[in-house]
Length: 220
Image 1 (cartoon, rainbow, N blue to C red):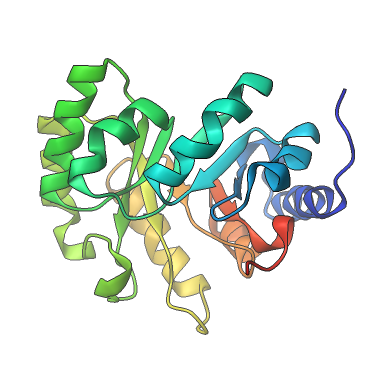
Image 2 (cartoon, rainbow, N blue to C red):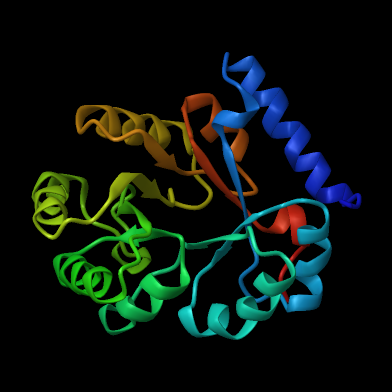
C-alpha cells in the first residue's frame, strides 16, 4: 500500500501539468528523486509513496544505503548523477541501473571493461559541460562526436545527454542547445532540470528530471 508524501505529490502534479502544457504525457518524464546525503530513514517515506527512481552522486554512499532499502523496495532504480572516478567504474556498473555522468575517454574505457566483467549494462548518458564550467565535469560540446564514437567502440549503451546549466542564469537556452545536440546525434534521452528549473526543462523536452530539494527539503 502506498502512502501520501505531500512534497512528492506536488512535484508529480507539477510534472503532469507542465507536460500537458507542452503537449506531452506525464509518463514521458522520469522523475529522479535525488537522495544524495539523505539517510535511509529520510528516503523510506518517499519509497513508501511509490517513488522508484533515485539519484545518488557517490558510489560509496549509495553502496551503504541502498542494499537494505532495495530489499524492502525491490523495484527501485538507482541513477548515478555525480562525477564518477574511473577506478569506481566496476562498483558503479554493479550498483546503478543508469549512469548520467559519462564525460571522458578514460571513464568510457573503464565502464566498457566493467560491463564486460560484471555482465551488467546500465543505460548511460553523456554529460556535457554545456556552460563551459570545467569544475562541474562534462564533455565540451565540441568533443561530443568523438566521445560518442568511443562509446560505440566500447559498446556502452548510450541513451541520451545530461547537463547542469550554470547557476543563477536562464536555463532555457542551455536546455534548447541540449535538445538540438541530442536530436543531431539521434539520442532519445535528455537528463536535465533540477528543483529550480525542471518545469522549464520539461517544456524544452527533458525525459529525466533530477529533483532533490523540492522533495526532501534543503540539505544540511
